Length: 363
Image 1 (tube, rainbow, N blue to C red):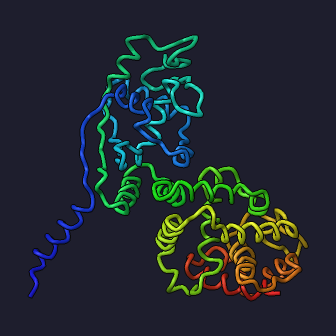
Image 2 (spheres, helix red, strand yellow; image 1 turned 30 degrees about the vertical axis):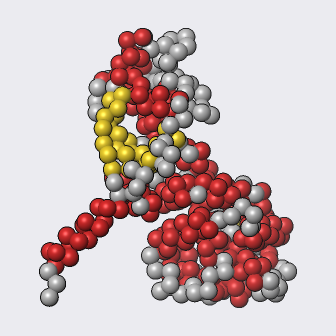
Image 3 (cartoon, rainbow, N blue to C red; image 1 turned 30 degrees about the horizontal axis):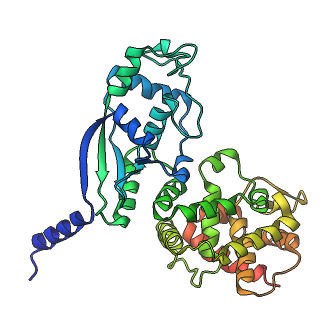
């Protein structure tokens, strides 16, 4: 009989060997010098998640000047010894922006805070700069650095990022997925960005600015790439959908080769076709009473129309020519009730919308 305690010890030992870390305090000045020397890397695709408001940035500066300890910053050591930021983006980016060093960002002009109202208008250099003593205090303040060493298992690094995010102010599922994919293959993230920047995609999904800021457009693109030609779209196969999408996205990133763009061709052809017939009305609800499309973007419509069209384009089978009529037919079907659109979990909804789309969009 196996000793449960011994089995657990073995699991703990195996898991510990998958991730090797180090820890030590570092001054902001030292951290800044690493960035200047190109030894601290903030991947461009990760940097796009920097979205703190001015008040948040000013409160961080206030905390540093008052000597309030900051949470740890986590970096991953690459094979060449450089550090890649994996957690602490908002804090590190703000620290660099304050000093006028953050690539692509203007120097920061601070605003008043609770304990330091005279921070209003202050900057590192400029008409009303921080004093030399204040700048030195800032640079000498310490941050606890946690280093995930190069010998750690890559997959474990991404799992660590997810756990760290859950302890702080959480990112959306796609923002977190975006950061993970940067670590897997930055080229894939850049390629994905070219898809979501395509005019026909932007026009048809017509997302509000907040959703765009939270990278929901990328979430939709990944869902399309993952599901449009999936062989098994049952609720059982799609159980724990967000984790399934995480796993599929990592596989796509690992396999991505710039010279092989078949998935991109299907994506572009799909949304170009939909845009040509439906434009920004593509994924809205059809109102029979008002004889028009109305409201905002609906996942249900996206899953039926975009995934259905994409399925047939990928398979080389005919797509029906009257997409506008098909979109209207969708909302006259008895199963398309308000409860179905809003009251069904993701897995069950997909298990119904994907087969429906493949049927409804067939030529």
